[in-house]
Structures are given as C-alpha cells and as structure tokens.
Length: 259
Image (cartoon, rainbow, N blue to C red; front, side):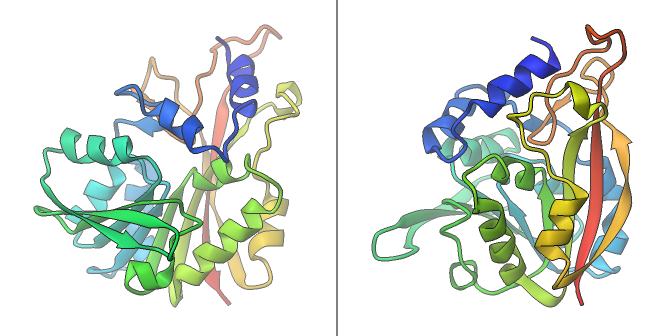
C-alpha cells in the first residue's frame, strides 16, 4: 500500500470512535508509534524547558511513547493521557516498569483509571483527553509535548481542534511552553483531499491571539528502511511515487508561549 492509499484509508476512519483506536492497539506495533525517542525533542530539550529540571510535562494521546521515559530520565514528572488501556499496559510491559493502579471519577458519569509507575515519575491516565481536566491532573503543567496529537484531533468532527487547543492552553502555566510536532506531505497536490493536514494558518487561528508562535524548523521523514519507526505523526510512504518523483512527509516543529 503506497502513501496516498494509506492516507485515504486513514481518512475513512472514524477518529471520534474509541473502537477505531482500540483496533490500532490489537497489534504490538500500532501504526502511530515509533521505537525511538524523538530526535527533535532531545535536540530542543534545553530550550523547551528553559534549562529547568523537575518540571511537570504533559504528553497528550501518549500511547506507549518512549519520549516519556526519556523525559522522566531528564528529571521531569511526566503525565500522559491515553484512551486505550492496551496502549498503557504495553508501555509498562515494554519498559519493564511496575505500577500502582486506581480508579477515579472524572465526573458523575465518567470513570478513569490512573497508572503510576513505581520506578519512574510517570503517571498515565486512561481516559479521553476531552474528559481530562486540570483538577484531575493535580494542577497545570510547565510544558506540553504534542507529538502528532493535533494531527489526529484535526481528523475528528468540526470544532474538535479548537476545543482541544483550548484544553491544552488551559493546562499550561502562564510561563509554560507548548512544543508541537505535526506532519504535512512534501507534495500536497497528490494527497487525498479527505485527509486534513495542520497548516500555519491553523496555528495562527488557534494560537495567534493568546500565544507567540516560533517556527523551529522542519525535517524530512525518514523511511522505515533507514530508520525503524512508525509513530502517530508518521505514515508509510514510497520512495518513488507513481508520478515519477520521490514522495515524503515533512515534520514541522513549533514552540508556543503565552504573550
């Protein structure tokens, strides 16, 4: 299956449905996961944290990301939010971590489960990001690492992206920093129109009134043959598209800070 076919398949998914995400976690190698720590996160860590340690960092739609392990090893307290229990259990199993588990109430109608690692300062909440709150989280966060989550949210119903952005900024301390990664096709003209990509215009509309937006750069996504990875912000691609030119995804990186 080439990139365009795969994007068309993804675009047909119901991203609002929990069953869609559960289906992705029926395999040990879900589509939206990579087996490496994000290189840009490591490169920008000091700037991201302003050189501080012992920060509270939120990772929305975290899956079993190894970024959480790495951030905890830098001395931070990491909180992840993941809808699917299989993804959370896979995170602890893959990293050989033990944990305490307890049920909590998000509202009178909605329950969640909290998983707290014993060996590292990592806490994962099994719930929808739209049901998560500052009160449940135990306070606001110093930093948010959004690796591809906004791309998935953008495929949900109209209005969800604005709702998600408002929730994220509500989680962020006034002096906090939002680190965003999203992908776009290098050649958007050959992409299925049904797949909605994040754009600079989206960022300006969503963050511009409240935040300064700093572009950090973009990098070409590396094929699996060169780098063994497959994460939530990456989809399979072909080295030579049928149109006779190489096709690839571009990964975009931004910092957002309150004005």
